[in-house]
Image (cartoon, rainbow over all chains, first blue to last red):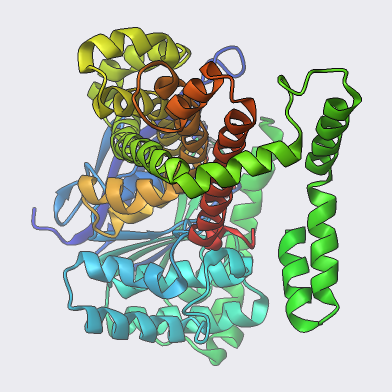
Length: 267
Length: 269
Ligand SMILES: Nc1ncnc2c1ncn2[C@@H]1O[C@H](COP(=O)(O)OP(=O)(O)OP(=O)(O)O)[C@@H](O)[C@H]1O
Ligand SMILES: [Mg+2]
């Protein structure tokens, strides 16, 4: 079996330990999840809040150990974090004592690139996320949306094979969000990579992705998989494409179904 | 914060310097009141001038000590001991605290030692340390080191344990090794706590400097206080005590401004 896949997730379950007394049994976040993400595909992950989307990304990233089942990439089974799989966290996780420029340069320096090159690449990515002029600012001096863009720049700068993004545009206004979506799609086309993109925004998922997975209410599993079939080009005209509109409605219904189940399931 | 505002006002406006002086007086009003009460009690005759010399007498004794060079020589001896002990404690304490927080083996090894040593009054060790290290500098430096070590270890440990795991994850997924995570991520992330521990240690270093010299020394400010007291020269003794107090105060303020400069990335939050 040669590696024609980007990420292979097989029978992965994940339980968070409970705290004593309160929720002593723990939380089963993922149950027997199977998902095959193709090589260099842009894959979006939708699902109700708390269904285990972030957990799945952390497992792929190697940040939390796989308890049952297995996750592998072209480099073999995932056991630890590595620079081949970079992530944009839902909560940004910038280094607060470093400036924006230093944050974006960090991963490049770890690659062993010469300082001047690190600086150039970092500057280019800061420009890309429209943060020029804020190179010397500390994260605490930036708004939530700006911090999020700095985190995106830091991750994109290292140009990983596998890009994991956890609601990366969640803190952005509609305008910036649209610009960033087009930029991301462009970057992905220029430097093909496997992308796993978590979002709550159905239209964002349809606009960006080649395939979309919809997760069930907790404990999460992949409930539906949909090929968007919108082709490689995405721009303004995609938004009015009949297929785009139809897909949006169809997926919206599927996601809502799961969200209703989640709310019925109680805690 | 308020003092900073005052300073910037003073820079803009000539009248501001008056405002700044008034603000400073208000801030240290309790100290001025204490000095006034001190002087009044002395003059009222409630307490003998021997026990509580007047401020004038103390000032005169201070000038004498300064002119004779006695004060400077002994202050230098004391402060270099304190600085050596404190410096070593910061280096060792930071390393031990960070390793305890990140390496389970270190935690198992050092945790019981730290728990036993932390609450123990280090001055109780003076006689023992004297036997071990003799009457020279080494015994004082060791005591200061030991006293300063514990607050630094504990603050580095707590700071490192409290680091947001997501920034550690970010660093590892950007290619940082375990060593690099410790030096480049956990250390700076824990720095606010570590510096707070160092500030406590700075105060401890003054306490231990004086108390150890008081018991075992041939020079230093603690020794000077003891010998002047034994000789009945109370104004001079008070002058040395006040010198120690104000040196400690200045050192703390200097360290404080170093900290706020070093942690300027935090300020906006
Ligand atoms: N560290 C943790 N300890 C205990 N339980 C956790 C922990 N992290 C997540 N959980 C639980 O696991 C479940 C899945 O969490 P996860 O963060 O993966 O959801 P999510 O799909 O990313 O949600 P959202 O869309 O709100 O970000 C949730 O029910 C949550 O309560
Ligand atoms: Mg999440």
